[in-house]
Image (tube, rainbow over the protein chains, first blue to last red):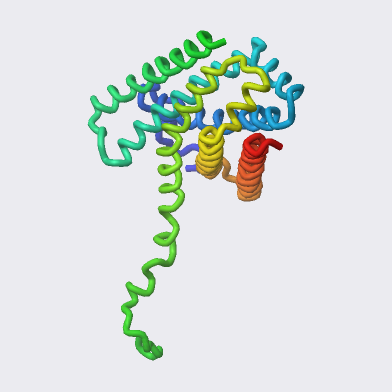
Length: 128
Length: 132
């Protein structure tokens, strides 16, 4: 039997996506996205230190529709990664491994992150 | 140990302890958790603060960044953020990039980029704090 014809165990894409696996890979994806998003933080701080013109450029970009889109994605990714990160810290402490608890904490992360994002934007719109 | 000079009173187990992965293996994991823990309050503080200053002009931003408590918290936030980010991206690269040369270049690039961005950010904050 040639190497290519050997029976293989089912790979990732054969499994039905579950809350647990989707949240797990989302933690990585948001993590990488947030790491890229730090460019925005550094740009914003450097612009503030450079002067009013450079700062106006950043603020203008962030205030455009694409800027809003990026900031909205950024804020939800950040709140998601933060909430799911806390979930991971509980696991690191050896707590919350029972399957029903894993699902409960999973949904809590999804809705908690959404709530925190809405609160942040409510503060922003109330202040602007 | 036959045929070998072995003057130490220490057992072989005691000699190997602290060598190999037992010496550094947990460091990455622990640093990732410590920075994560620090980032929970720092991130919430930052998001609420910046949201509250939405649409601020340059003068307001300079005043905010340059006030002592904010300066300290921003330096902490930047340090913990980039430390945490490069630890996380490192693991992602190690998991998904299998060609040794590409992996090495990617890891070096991520580490260098994190240090560059962190120092640039801290420099910007301190420059405003000291009225440059």
